[in-house]
Image 1 (tube, helix red, strand yellow):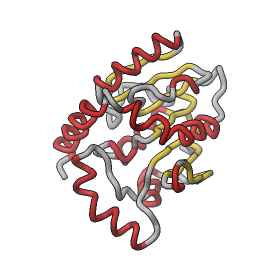
Image 2 (cartoon, one colour):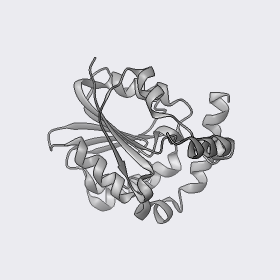
Image 3 (cartoon, helix red, strand yellow):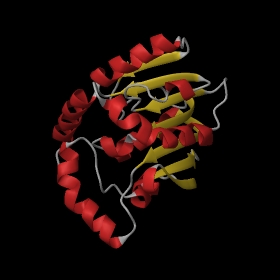
Length: 207
């Protein structure tokens, strides 16, 4: 699929999701979000980037300086409201394409992407950008649904992939080839959430 076309589809999908996203997805994905922050081992002095911050459901979990970006201004409007309600002065939010971030090299100590990598048109480009902006030796945490390694389940995920793409996410994104393309080696892979259907991946940015 054309990346520009897919990007427009993702933007349209999340414009529709924005008003109901928290209600539908908060409790389902909460255990994974908590685990991602825990394994990120964040400290108050860390400068952290969250890619695809969405409506900001992770915000109450952060103990540090945070920059959050998202492609959807509608989703980010909800995050702005949450920052104001939580009175979090150390949070900066920006509408930004994660495949071409306007941050400098090695700007952040750590970066997280929770439920984001399968919802971007070019996950390889996003992870390369995350590596670029995170310092050498910094931590990258990825929380996502990836294509099952079980033959039948993987086949089913391939079959529904065209429909899922139009809904704003990929059902059959394979983890191992993705990490290999961007030069990341997982330090930890942990299954989370209902039916262990999502994987939490922690990597060290070895530049």
